Length: 140
Figure 1 (tube, rainbow, N blue to C red):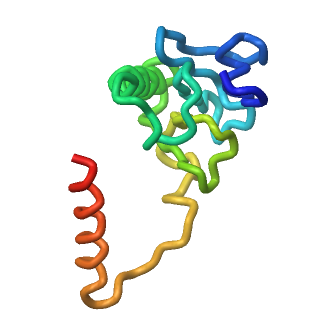
Figure 2: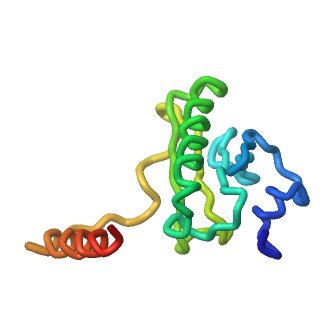
């Protein structure tokens, strides 16, 4: 637990939250300012700041819990699907890895992504792809 981290406080039971899922590695709770009712945040119990920081031993449990939550949006709330997203540093309101799982229905008013779109200049896409491939190759 990291002092001052509200999500660590929720995991420890020191900060009240509406818990919806708990297992050995993860905790999920309702977002206090939901995009739509049922909007849930999934966090690892261990204090991890961003997705790149998530230890390999927690990847499968974290993804498995996210799958369960996405299914619960449909089966439990009658949603037609879900929106699943996370921020890493930029727009990350709490510096503890958290995945948003939001119930969706057609016509709910949520449109696309919340950031401006851009285009690539000629040949620029290949340069970006090369840079990403190189970075991925150094990580194995």
